[in-house]
Length: 200
Image (cartoon, rainbow, N blue to C red):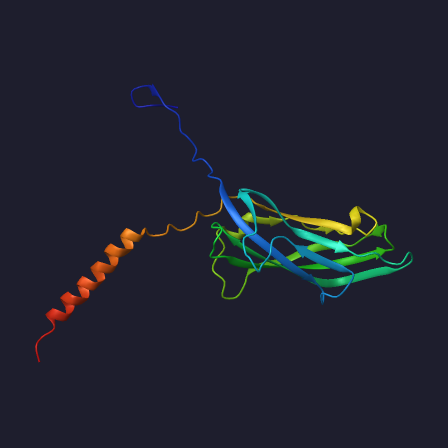
């Protein structure tokens, strides 16, 4: 680009800054007691056990299909599943919780044939949760996903997601010195107000 007195200059695009995201997931299928289950990653007892660099893709967990009798069938008709995920850009939190809701439809016959699909229904922040460190519109989940029978890949079906933007950086933590100065200023202001009270 040439502007002004003919000096050449270039316009630089704002670089995308990579940002680590710490997370963990857990989930249930139907009532939680059938042959198809969901195993999350990390542990919600210790949030942030997994991490990825945003923007980027990451593993939400795996559906696990147990073995069926040779002639056995499993049919799901709009059977719900729910995956919960906690996210933070700091390994120590605070963590935001999202609920990923979906349905399962199709039939698994024996241990080799499956027409079952997992489909997303909604992604919502949990009630009372802090906002996630990214815009939900930038989060996409690899669904619909065909669910494998037990004889294929051991019955494991991985579920992945993509965050297409860099997550927000963690909020800066005030330095102890700054907090001490702020505290002293508050005390001083309180003393000043006390002394200015009119005598009774």
